[in-house]
Image (cartoon, rainbow, N blue to C red; front, top):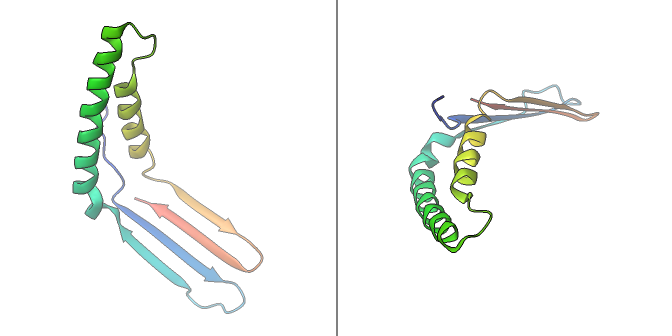
Length: 98
């Protein structure tokens, strides 16, 4: 099983073509939010396990909320390495997720 590692840094650069300046660069350290996100995910995971067990005991057909939470965490970890470049007439926007 692959390790789940959420994005560390999100780097956004906006540059206007008319001025040929360096533009604006925003560096967002996403790892600072990790402790808050881990607490939130732990709470949601516990609630989803309880809901799944209650639905399983009642005989409901769909009782896979825990799988949904874990898949969402896996999807968030797969966003690492995304490089998006948006080129329009007036500006250039670059988003890098590390």
